[in-house]
Length: 198
Image (cartoon, rainbow, N blue to C red; front, top):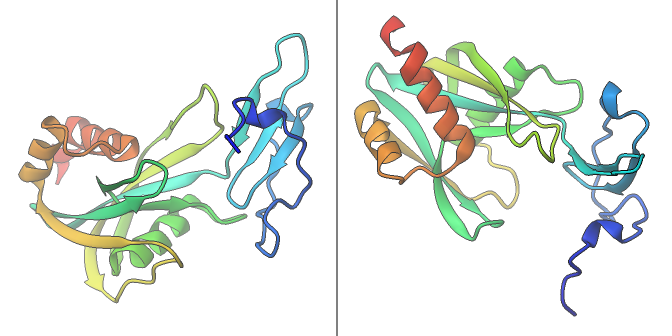
């Protein structure tokens, strides 16, 4: 059976994922009058009221980390992404758990995805990943003083760590080899505003 074009109009009972826990999410203040029409494991979908209703992905937020192995080497990852059917070059990243501060999430996700614990982590910036349809806030961090402790990947994740020179990383960026939006934004922000401070 073909997937319906207007999939958001299907009435779904919560929880959607039988046997899988759903993350409780509060609607942002500006969306409190909206109705949740889909409850998922990692995000919900809300429909606003009024003459021009919109379907909005309600996301708990996420982090992305630029990890330095030394002054000139970063830890990139190759991440197998089911949604696009490709293995992408990325910076390590992950979703906030309920009530988890972004800094704690950054430290946790760095260990889980790369196997490195950082002695120093500082926030670079925050940006909205897709504000036309999603509430997700992405908190970008830089991590230094890395100590290898071993990966702790989530079930189903397929991630390999690839140490890469910073200059080569920028070259990959310019040649379109890095196509993950959050990684592009974080690398360009760092190069534009903070690279000279190290």
